[in-house]
Length: 204
Image 1: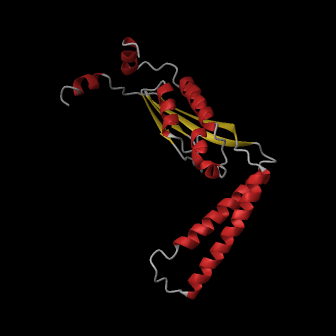
Image 2 (image 1 turned 45 degrees about the vertical axis):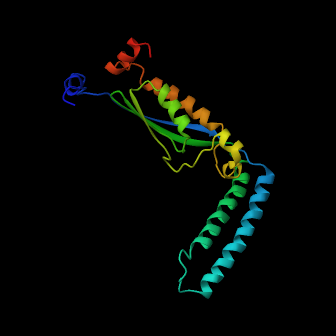
Image 3 (image 1 turned 90 degrees about the vertical axis):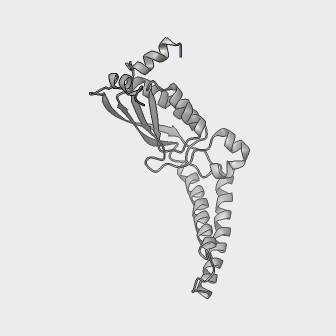
């Protein structure tokens, strides 16, 4: 550590650039079919029956003596509303074709912070970081009420049922990588840190 500190001390930036941008954009949503809505309604009704049955069991045994007595009722209730939301979103998408999202970009010296409302797959996060001009890029996910965003591969692998509950289109992963990369390059066009200069000198 003693060997490293002197060179690091020479590169300290006592007045780093501080810049913040807020970007709002319209992104495509996951398109549902009439069949998706009908199936979701049926599943919601089935789960309603399960939920009401579990409630009657709890009323019959109010002492809650059994371990994790709440799990079955809670799961049925949550999944019931999950499916009802799918049917509601099918009607909603007839009027609204896109979803407006807000993303924040922050530069602090040679470091970038970028937020998005979704939970991205690791490989997409790596793509954004690799294409970022910053020395180090931090991605803040699930900002402002977002949800899990499935990739096309995950849907093909069997998570299509879950994907139908997401408001965002699966292809949005690639769109976000492109948007983030362009925005980061725009807001950090003159990044000339010693680290980046060293990368250039060795052909990285």
